[in-house]
Image (tube, rainbow, N blue to C red; front, top):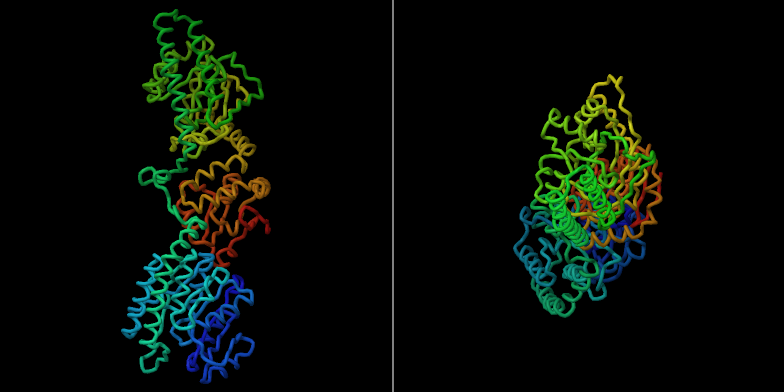
Length: 636
């Protein structure tokens, strides 16, 4: 409690029979107790004096009421530098064993007012007290729009820096209701925590509740509060709601879900417009330009070898034109070995997206592709790729080999995606052996290529385009070796390993915080106004954390991020440092619920609900960071 600057404030008036036992139980949990002697006339002052410096006492001569005692106690707590004060009754009805639950609620809900909700159906409570509680609950809902099950409980935690209207608080029993109403009006979140309650037998109870007088005061107070709710409370709630971004707090399911399944990233206006532009661009050039030209060329023109090569060159030109006009994307082609494709080869490449083809087709006009049945029969561009002599893999290797041999003899290389399909996480799947059987049978070299970033730009399960940087790396040609006795399975594994190593190298060079910032923004889009605003603020201050995250060595096994907040920095840390296990510790209950809703969390990212220090200290970490908004402080 001291670590979180929490003390206990207990007003007391003539509860000498119970106050000592209550203090003893509190001292097992808390070393900062403020007792307000509200003009006691019994032996309470002597009992308090017996605790010496273990208890801070605030005393005055005559009884002023519970409201006045609370104001004095809370003021004393604030003067002492505390940020929260737990209030508890001195008659023994509240249990100190509920303090951990109350403190946990403070940690989970920073700045909230925590109230201990009693289950009054399980205790012997008189009808007048039960009616008073229900009466108070009803009017509180009218005045604030908030439903609470127990507005009369004295077991609470007040955020001292956020309390409002203390100077207007009444001095008697009804003051606690008044403090709740003012807190609700000023946008303080009110959180209920179930607590136990003990009521001694009726003949042993000490009560200062005066039914007639107190009901009258409560009725008068509620009259003023109802009037105040219209002229002050409602406007205040609206202003504070906007200031704390409380409207639009939930997910916008139209943008974050596809049916009942959460999208990997939310649909944003920017993504929608990019995708609409790309679709219109593609349809215009394929349906309105290339298809008519192709039809006329092959219907009325000379379909000779030169004509076919010109057609391939037009496809290459169109691919390059598309690359230059990809919306919100940058592309690069890396060819350090100067591959010219002047000699036919089997080109093997990892498969990430439908946009793989334009990148590869831009390299050379003398490329043909093995495609699946769906692409071969596509109604938009199927006729175009058939004219380009692309071949369907469904024909089988026996039927394909003569056609491929003819293409080889005419100077064409064949592009094959040995995975056969795309993975959802852009990892390289197991290679099939067909490509290497073709290379061996046709005595052709193999040129491995590696695509990076295309799957980030256009995800397999997300039709909407993102912002991205796409790269194609052309690796060194591997000549045909007639003496190679390795099995096709081993050959496929060898080339898969070559491509995986290059993909890892490209990822290490390119995947930094700047690369993933937009992606993380997409993750949190439309998850609530407060969440989106906080994530945008963090991402804007890129310079505060980029150096720390990008410089974590690849050999780091485990990293802890304390006070991870909404989890945005943890996402960046996990995406950039994919070989490290990232443990993000989150205090706030709202934030842990937020990150648990997000889809496709990286396998190396682990969110931990961090309420007590024991959740953290049980694990050893190679590096430990503390987050403060957008800033990162390295602890270890």
